[in-house]
Amino acid sequence: MTMTKLTLAAIAALFATSVALAAPVSFKKADANADGSIDASEFAASGVEGKTMEKLDKDGDGKLNKKEYSVVLDEDCE
Ligand SMILES: [Ca+2]
Ligand SMILES: [Ca+2]
Image (tube, rainbow, N blue to C red; front, side, top):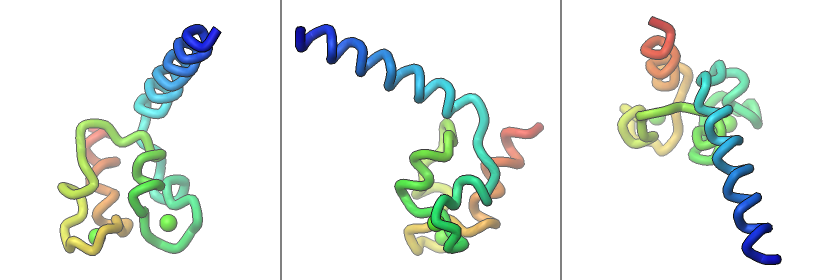
């Protein structure tokens, strides 16, 4: 049934999200394409919780450099 598939997909999505939120990954890991900055899709996959890209992107270029991203790691490592 379609409903069952949807439910399973929702559960899988929730599970994946909670696992991803357990710990923000390092800058190197978050930068999946290794171009030296974290774009929106990389940020979405990085597991950062409670912060938006807009807030972290201090220079407003739409990407996070290592310094901008490190704020996430510092605050989560206290
Ligand atoms: Ca990147
Ligand atoms: Ca930036």
